[in-house]
Amino acid sequence: MRLTHQRGFSMIEVLVAIVISAVALLALAGVNAVSLRYTKMSQYRAAATQLANDMGERLRANKGNPADGALAATGFFAGAYDFTTDFAGQATRADLPLELCDTAASNCTLADIAALDLAQWRRLVRDQLPQGSVFLMRQAAQTAMDLWLVWRDPAVAATDEAPALALECPDGLNRGGDASVRCSYFRINL
Image 1 (tube, rainbow, N blue to C red):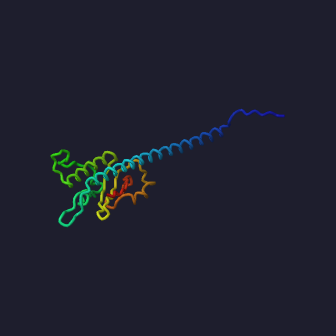
Image 2 (cartoon, rainbow, N blue to C red):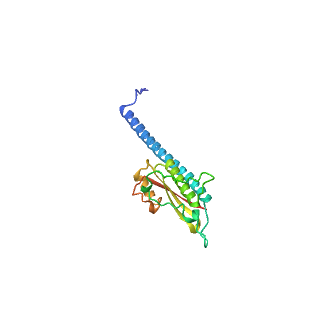
Image 3 (cartoon, helix red, strand yellow):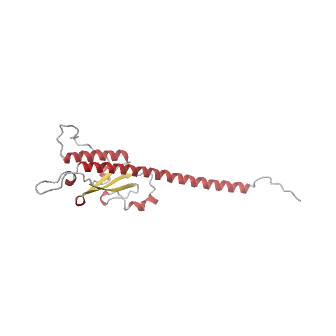
């Protein structure tokens, strides 16, 4: 019988092991990057959901009355919460109205309260979402508000995300073909 002794790996076996390890590490790095991107997108969508709930409560608190013969519509029914300014028109933070309706001596109408609600809420959106913007359209016949929350997502890769964007945003938003603009749609029934 003849005994053979193995003296070590050949150079080719070492190179193959290094290549396999490098490919595995690159794959893990790619998965990690995608995971971080989707985690951030999930955080933005969660913030958008909370902001939509906030606006829903504001709308319900200032619902007002529909037009009834001699009486004009008030609050939501008067369109006081409609806001259809395009994305570029919301590049700066919203200004608060002069009347803040925060004292017992305030003589605020439902329209004044709606203007304050909308300005405060737009500021919240701007603070919680990157370049956060809003788009609200009243559906009076259904006593509902169509609401879009809009933000610029800096981590979006234009090549793999662009097809989904076509249906996310409202027609009047005019995002200018920017693939990093994201929208979340909500319908608030009063």
